[in-house]
Amino acid sequence: MKLYRFFIPVLLCFGTVHAQEKNKTLTISGYIDTYYSYFTHDTDANAFQPYTTVSARNERFGLNVAQIGAHYSSDRIRSNLTLHWGDIAQATWSEEYRAIQEANLGFRIAEDLWIDAGFFTTHIGTESFLPKNNFLSSTAVATYNEPFYQAGAKISYEGFEKLYIELWAVNGYNYFQDVNDAKSFGLLLQYQFNEATSLTYTNLLGRESPDDFPVKQFRTYHNMYLNTRLTDKLFLTLGGDIGTQSNTTGDGAGTAFMYNALATVRYQVNPQWSVTARGERFRDKEGFISGFIPRTDGEETGLDLWGITLGGEYKPVTNAYIRGEARFLRADKDIAMFPDNHNTNERWELMVTLGYHLDHLFNF
Image (cartoon, rainbow, N blue to C red; front, top):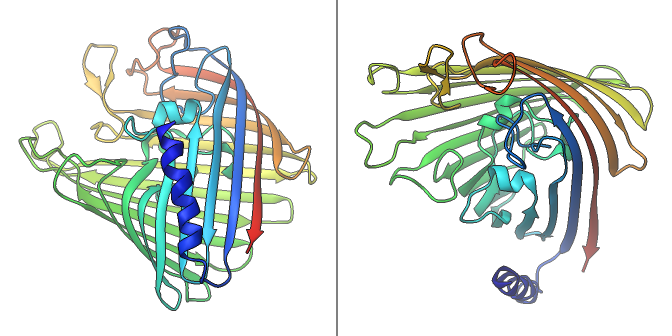
């Protein structure tokens, strides 16, 4: 209750103080996604499956997300507040601020130039962590290992016809609260070739090791993805990440390297029906992003796997969907990432998700 008692007066005061602003709008958004899923990897009752955040409880009806947001915009000021609950928030979000998906405020400091600060969802990644923003409800293992949220500030420029730019300073890789006295810096560049095709590059650079860690580990993380409409019915997304971290290899002095890639193709049969396929690859042998996983010989290693997903979607109305998906993941044969399976390096997943989202715009 304390959360609501704080934010509701803030929103009311915000609208009063800036009553002189022009072109004021307030958008109220809502989103709910529910699911039933099955995994061949058995876990404890109600436990989350590893390496996924969507429909993550085995043989359960569940709630992926229920969220509500308020988004204010004028010619000089903008602000976003989104609260969320459900398995996605439970599995991925900061324990200190689990209900807050985003809370930020921005000012226009020059023509087409804005500065925003607060809590944000990440600027990195080919996919979104929210099913409604993707062709598929399930997300790639790459998305699972990328940041979900960040605290900091950004400067954005939207004055170019085809190019959009963001410069970021944040506490760190997937942090609201920092673990050291250093800051990480990032970039987003998006180029819109035409109405059908865009190319986006993002990165994040900074020291991610805690202050009391024996050595300083500097991490670089680069992401690039292409979205294109090949025909009126065929859509393609290609994306990949490359990351490095110093003082991380087995001897503690070398630089570790990881990469991932994914390709997603959607065929739109008609406005209501579509089918989608995705292939993915993830390799982080030093485990500085994925963490360490037991091997069959008792040693530990980083994650090394590939996967395929096939899904279908039916949209009863524009803002709603019913999706069914099947997914297969297979790790290197020596990795025991699913210990309760007959094949400890493999997992099948089946899920059905139902989602609905809305945005209502108020002008005043």
